[in-house]
Length: 337
Ligand code: ISE
Image (tube, helix red, strand yellow):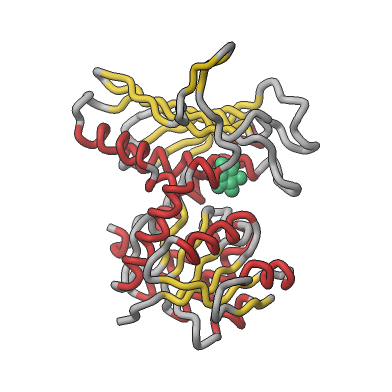
């Protein structure tokens, strides 16, 4: 059994750089062996100070490197399919940032390829499942101490969007997290998605309608709404309020410390997802490494990636048509039962 994961990190952008830093400083049992980026200078900058790591411009070359025995994919979602299929063919542990792929057809190809392998190799980067408050709310719901879960209300706010962030990405790059969160909290699949476009901010770039209101329904009829607002200017905020039969539970609103001083009171607003979910990312990546060293995965699977991709596809149609769009899922393969 491998004692150390020697990881090729594909993509040295914002998320990739954050993972490289965490792998190099805080994660046990893993090392960065290679960093791949189409911008070779960016890959070279990312490996500075990491002994034995190489910088490459081609993912296939990294996967063929004898020193690499695992891969972390942190490129934009539309580039995932090709790298995933190549990594599955190598039968090595894979951590794939969300979305697995942006649409159901390509995500299903990944599920089929992994099913053919006969064991799970892909963990999908839904880090919120590893956030302490998310985990606590999940336990409250599962334990049933406040009765049945009836509704979920989500607020997902980003300060601004990077260049190239399309209107569709509000759904398949941002709300994809809530698709997974709703499935995580309810233990059910999502059956329909509706998107309403109301009054838009003047701070959104051309082509983006922001904010949007997304309404989901699950198998047992739990309703979940999401305010996705990605040019909210003030900071990064991800919060959820759950309505149960005998109580209301809120998470994600308060970031300590809470200060009272001359003329003002209050807490802090996180500037971005690295700060808000830093601890969750650390826990997520350590869980992946620990499980991968034992031949498994330690979090959301390719099925979760496929099911959320199907929600994204429905969400984008709903964005376009304004209608309520059913989520069509193929039967779940036995590997993910
Ligand atoms: C980004 O890719 C993330 O994953 C963040 O968690 C999310 O808040 C943001 O909207 C996405 O663009």
